[in-house]
Length: 343
Image (tube, rainbow, N blue to C red; front, side):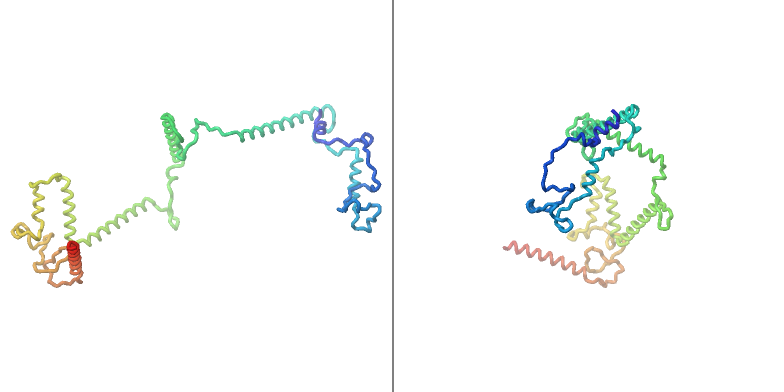
């Protein structure tokens, strides 16, 4: 079978048969049949009220049916046409032996390609609708950290740890090789100022570190200037005590000379035998400077005035009010306690 015959058989319509071979159909005669054949557009009136086209003049009545003559003429012309208007595509155009063989090969190729496409489409649909099967060897479901979920054996845990280590080593090796190819200088960020000059980051960091150290030293000097000689001496003595405490024994007995000396040097206001001590330096401060030997108003720090003081109190009276407030608070507390005991 040639390609033209195959296409005509499966895809083309047959040529109209001659009128002599057509089976004749009996038509029912209608006395009101119209002499002109064609498409009639009728209104919605019932048949009893509808008049025939022969009784009503079309030109005089606007509501009469309209006969489409052009459509009827074209239909009649198509039916009378004997030759098919279909054209054969491809081949030599003839129905000879050579053209038939070439058309058969082309038809077979078209059928084979269509069958292959259909099979591929069907296989893709089956794969898409098929359930997903997870491979347990690939790790199954994993958590966000990359570890497998669920119970695991010791061998699986060791294998997972080894695989993670190999992955990290591979990433590190790739990173190092990339750095080696591009060069170390290419990885360093270049900073520029507003004018476009390159900023030396190492020098800027050294300058910032040096400025920070200078600020700390300045703050330390200001704190040192606010301290007095007694506070400095107490600080130094405290540091010395901490340094000596490293070699000090855990238990201190009565034979400890340092402890005995410290106890002797301690001042007690109710010690009647303190006046018999001759080793204590009287009239000198902790720094060794002479002190004022006359009377003076007490202060909260217990500091005595120097020997050059002229005896005039130039304070604003805050120390006196501070002592009075403490004495008043203590006295009120004692009275409240006594009242509670009386009740």
